[in-house]
Image (cartoon, rainbow, N blue to C red; front, side):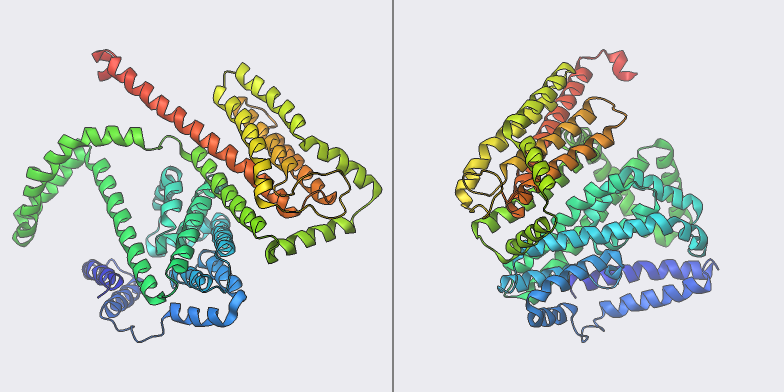
Length: 542
């Protein structure tokens, strides 16, 4: 038996006695009786290997992908989207399709870098659709039909409370657990979790998931059946580990209360007294707990809690995850277009660059030429540096030194890196430029410096509670986009140069901001620990 069959056998063994006892007590409706019978029999048959003779989905996918060639991009992308967007992940594991895509890339049919990006986007888009469906339909549907499955209003409130506290972690970790991955976005949407809180965790989770399984198939492309086998086993082990950790945390938090421990002791005494057969199993467990587990936990608990609070970014939450999402997305974009620039020209970049020039030529007028020339000057390094220094000075005035340092160093590092990357990639300038240009094209320095305006807007949002802070960020994004597009319109850069320049500064800024956030968090933890050590005994007790 493989790991999935063992899991199915365990699930059937746990489900059967519970369903039987509730059946005898008359607590099961006709629908739940049918579901229980079909579920237990299905799990038992799967554990016994009754379905081994059926065609393997991964083998079918491999055959289809091998015949499709470059259309594999579309096949894998659609399946990655539908897994959560249409809930097919409930019946078909999405890892198999993504791994098969990696296998086809390993055989030279498609590009692994582009495949990772497409799968990442499709997975995120599918999760977003599922979240939207849950937000619009989920709770109303569960309130109307939930009582038939014992999903009551109090239970829904418990789920909503859980998602408010642990929703982000569930989205992130659940990406690697099949059933959780298929349902978590829908539950998050139906439990009133905001999309602003959902999005960063999902970007990080779907990005890690796409990269891991694409590369897994790519690296072991010569042995698909073996890699599928180990991938399923790894995901299964990961799910068991996560479930065990969640169970332990739940038990620790619950039985930390004296009244809960008293209830458990009373229940165990009752079982041992009134049910001798159960006492045969419960007595050794109680002795092991009293003599081994509890003393060990009591001795090491404070040390483990101290280490956990100081070495985990638990207090960082949404802000840190948002920075990680920006860092991953911008870093991948920078890597992809830089490699494409080194291999210049590539089929992908040629298509998007030609399309951008066709659009620019179709709208070209004299007044747009003048406007684009005026806008493009806002992306010059001296202009961006001027506004950056003003914003940094304001941050220093408000005693927000980390924000000021991030502003200054992000622009400075971008300015230092643009020229060496140009010399490294050696991408020629587009022909027929309407403004004076010099040197190589990739990346666009004007666009790289223009992203600083977005950083300034986000920083000012943090420094002061501005009424129009959302509008300020939107205007900054629009300005940076206009500067980048003006370089394409004036034929000073290709669109790929503009995207690479924006990704360069975004990567640098997200990296510096995340490091600053971590340093501040660690300093606060140390300050809290020092305050606790130096506080009087009466204060500590209080």
